[in-house]
Length: 404
Image: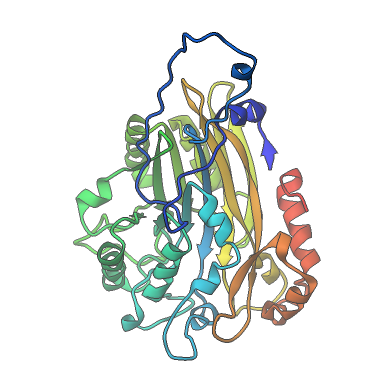
């Protein structure tokens, strides 16, 4: 984890335990606790001069985001249990501790969750089971991002089915990037954690050439040149309503390990508009992290955090690159006059492919072993895949931000 200069001093002031519910899981309600102080008139003793740790952790928020939950055929099939029921908890079991420790955990749900009634399908026109959504929630994710190029793979019917699933089953879980009404599409999502108001915006470059329904031109939040003024207005409104603004764009060129010119264009625009954090998805491989500053404003950019999980059926050199992803790991702190990023880094992960119920899952790279690497069926698609390949790729893309 790369430390910014002020982190040690900030953590001494604010570090503590975040709020946990009776069941040991994160509470979804926003924190509204108010901490007050007063000056004592009692004589100061030596004991009174000892540092006091604020256990509320007020003013410090940890943010985590997972990349593309990509339901290729083998991943989708891994959710069908021997008794015929569906469950996808295994996809998150090995990183659940990281998800749950975050005050705010986001995930890019790459494919629409239209439900099994519409038929589960993989590449190129995806549809996922509602049970994937159940597992996202059970694993501790707080916000689900749906603005992707696959949002309309099952047309208007699939999109509305997905929206109904979230609203009927998990009304407390915000889903962003898709909407069934204009008013919902116009909403700027803001959550409050530890006294900090955080806005999150989610856009996609397109929908694989599938046109937006004529009666629902607002149903997918697009990141296109024709919407530049709308996007600027969104950011301006977000800055008015929140202390910290996150943009999660679905952008870039697939399978390329660096940011392209279009990503740079939008990065410049986001910076000029005062965005604080950008976490990108879509390329299906990882791309570098960059802190941009002009001496007055700072913006952290994760150009691509890669796939969270996938099991591509394609073969050839470079396929192994798709198995490395990262969890974006960011800490923000209320500095009094501004909210700053005081810590950031990556948690590298490896998508593990194995046939059968519960076979497809994800491991932290630090927990991955030679034995697991040899068992990963992606090796039949790209024989160069190995534990060392994953470690070397992390070093190549992230440099000093990656540590073994």
